[in-house]
Image: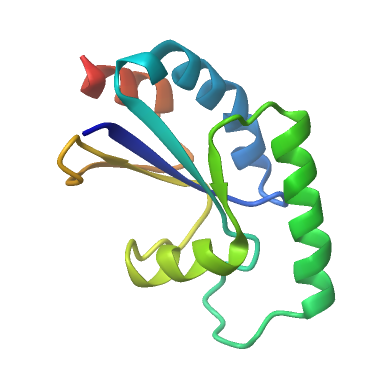
Length: 127
């Protein structure tokens, strides 16, 4: 029953980090009117199917947790273990940042990439 913005991001992705203030603005402005964000920490997203280095995963996961806490990302954030399979297998995410906007019925209504105007697209669709 809500609009949901699924945000695929990673701690090593500078454009993803640049988007955080915009996401906070959208969330604060629209959360009470049926808008939700689901952060998807995709630290190990790549075209390579090889298992990522466990030390890298552990370090990046800790870094991502710090970013969520220190940058005030108060919406739900999934871990890499659950986010990456969803990114690859359900939404075919190839690059970060990628945002998927779903309507109140769960249908995909927008796919937003790094160069797109996140605020204008989401606010335009929420009206």
